[in-house]
Image 1 (cartoon, one colour):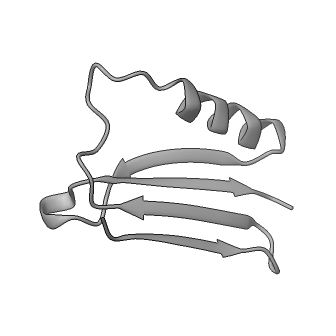
Image 2 (spheres, one colour):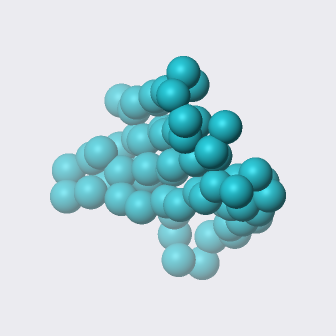
Length: 69
């Protein structure tokens, strides 16, 4: 399964993203890990979000994590 991972640690904000072309997150799926990522980013003044992946027609998932430093 192709995917991508990127990080830009040398310039604020610190930004990390991961994307794949898998099946994505089902509506009925648990999101404890995504909520935890968001809570941790917000505790540092940042944010975290997820959306469509890099597969055909947006298949898969992209997760982004950002903090000011």
